[in-house]
Length: 115
Image (cartoon, rainbow, N blue to C red; front, side, top):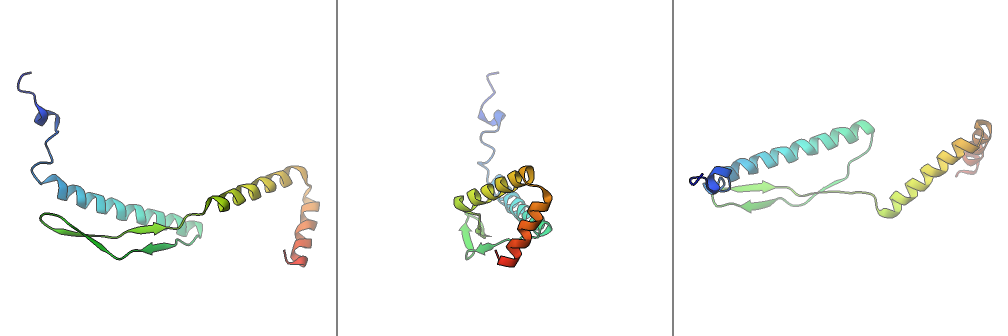
């Protein structure tokens, strides 16, 4: 037990400079896979993904430079989320308390009024 030190537990495994490039490569690959997965899911749902790409930044490492893109995905604001929740609750209440005939007449009236 006297010979057990930080090397035994793996605390100094990144000091040799081998692990950092491997982690950088794996991180970029994981980001690309996640981006692809998000795009395919949104395309399946029929929603457009609004992505704004910043200018490519270069991170200078001791041995090499890696190009990293910053992505900003536009998410709905708190007010938009609250409005969607209210609309969903209204629809649920209408489905519970209003007969289908009345809701059909209401939708026809809304179409005629352009609402």
